[in-house]
Amino acid sequence: MIARAQRLEKLPPYLFAEIATLKRKAIAEGRDLIDLGIGDPDQPTPNSIIDALKEAAQDPETHRYDETPAGWIPFLEAVATWAGRRFDVSIDPAKEAMLLIGSKEGLAHLAWAYIDPGDLALVPDPAYTVYRINTQMAGGDVYVMPLREQNGFLPDLTAIPSDVARKAKMLWLNYPNNPTGAVAPLSFYADAVAFARDYDLLLVNDAAYVECYYDPANRPPSVLQVPGSKDVAIELHSLSKMFNMTGWRLGFAIGNPDAIAALNKLKSNLDSKQFPAISMAGAHALLHGDNRPTLELYRRRRDILCDGLNALGWNVRKPDATFYVWARVPGGYTSIEFAKVLLERAGVLVIPGIGYGEHGEGYIRMSLTVLGDRNGERVAEAVARIRQYVPRD
Ligand SMILES: Cc1ncc(COP(=O)(O)O)c(C=O)c1O
Image (cartoon, rainbow, N blue to C red):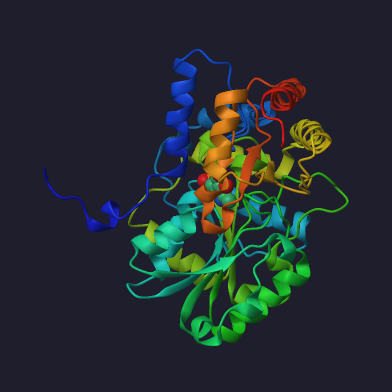
């Protein structure tokens, strides 16, 4: 067999692949599993977006390569309009925005666009694994910024030694945060922008969950609301969680024009953008999409889950944004052991926190995207089973 590149052999197995194996096994055994595992919206994409796709797909113009410099122009114009309305941030669609085939690919490729062997990136922990793994695959090293509960799951930038910060090239952030559900206030973003400026870092904020919030009067901010942030920051967004469009593969990056150009240069040698009809439907979603019914459903599930578990003595914090509940495991268990207990005794699938890094140990992540749940009844069933089979002792 031909040897694979060493960078592949060094990789840990993809976290969700392991969970998927456990899940398949339980299903093969005929168990009624309540899946609070992977964070993939269970509700369908809103009809008006599907109609926009149908209409755009009738136009033969959309059947060809997207040969625009950075993504279908009406899509990028819609991105700029959306960013203006949502954050009061001005984006030049010609220089400060680009289309992504989902934000995961953009995040991964940003590491490849900036990291040379031996370069250093500041990476949060616990975190979505893409930042760390792509930094390492590109030959870079990672300096871990722990996200601790007592700091609201924000990294303590003042704790990063100045020689480390000077050596680093990238500062990765993700707010609203997967897996902790934390939201960064604008004051934190202001500190992060100042830090990135002081140490000449590219600040990358993964804002995939910015539209999954529970209080419309208190929506999560964007790092680009910090004056001057576009000098150092790029922010990645996703239509996946915003409009239940995970399978459509559509996202975008906005911010620092140099980072946009670098990512675009790399990607123009890797892919040929998205099916233009999907880009058109995405433009419609950004301008007219309405995810409020889905957010209401998540809120109902969040309240049933958190209130239910708290009644059992779990002491769970209700997230203000994202569809994740990040809960401490009881003493005496590792996160993997406790996830197995929940799976084997209660048929409830959760993700062990260690899968997000060493500082995720001691926690499990429960997702509110529960397939087959119409109005919170499956979540209530999960709580009932936990009460019955997994007493907190
Ligand atoms: C923190 C975070 N960022 C980015 C993504 C990727 O989303 P997509 O590639 O669908 O835009 C995910 C997906 O789960 C995520 O959790």
